Length: 133
Image 1 (cartoon, helix red, strand yellow):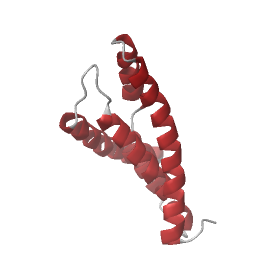
Image 2: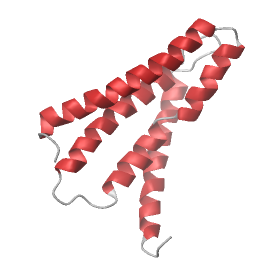
Image 3: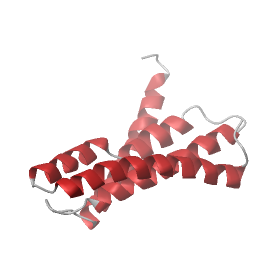
Image 4: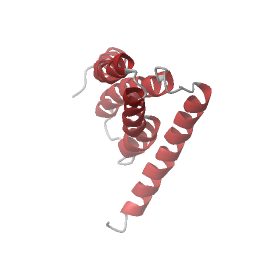
């Protein structure tokens, strides 16, 4: 780590704290039982993918974005907001509890919807902000 990187790490950590707190709030508001589709995690992962697409376009439209902007928002906030580990654990939990159809729907649905959401975010960003460079 170079001496000037401490501020960057602090920005990523602050963003991660914000995103993680938001995700925790959703998990508390929309809990899922062992035999239920994990709607809370699904929603944060899809919305985070959409936001990442918009963020990508937005940052590329800026003439001179702050060097910490993308790490703060993308790595920090959206990295803390979205969660692969909970997705994997919930998928396993559905399999172990005998909910193979639900597990398959969750795994494939998350993949398809998240990839589509990134594409939709890029499209929305381009419509709102113009084409990226």
